[in-house]
Image (cartoon, rainbow over all chains, first blue to last red; front, side, top):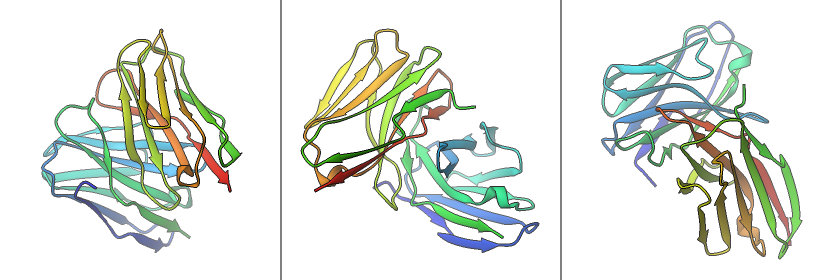
Amino acid sequence: DAGITQSPRHKVTETGTPVTLRCHQTENHRYMYWYRQDPGHGLRLIHYSYGVKDTDKGEVSDGYSVSRSKTEDFLLTLESATSSQTSVYFCAISESVPQETQYFGPGTRLLVL
Amino acid sequence: GQQVMQIPQYQHVQEGEDFTTYCNSSTTLSNIQWYKQRPGGHPVFLIQLVKSGEVKKQKRLTFQFGEAKKNSSLHITATQTTDVGTYFCAGRKGGNKLVFGAGTILRVKS
């Protein structure tokens, strides 16, 4: 498996609180992605990054922000968590061009009460 | 909304039976990838298809990309219990984004 870790792996939080999820890679890959996985929807792209400080929105970006200050770290922030953001969040990386294979982290299970 | 449709959503087969999942896009894809996710795990890359009409095999798995590059299929011959999981297709139209299908959940009864 590629060197990708996510933290925390599990989190329970309350509606209205801010939450930050971290993705850390040791592969020095350029591209990093945040997806959410929900039953019946597969994996939906939230945001992605194509370099340090370079990010772009995915199909479900509302309510989420990201930051990438170092190649190895990509942070996903829920500014004010809502119950609809209860999901499993996966980070993924790809090496140099977007056509290449994406390698996924172990996931973070988030429950918003 | 979902731009890549995948069917069936769920399939339960007897061990030894064949299994097929289908992926369809309304627009032409530059390539398509297939991933497998074991229960409780993360998606793992299986294969990428790029050329029109391409067919690739990995042991008991056969992957096809349609002539119009709008559809793809994954066929598993003689399923085993180790094949259980969710199979996702993911299409790329160009650019940086992969669009995933909703996945097909495969259960194998021994």
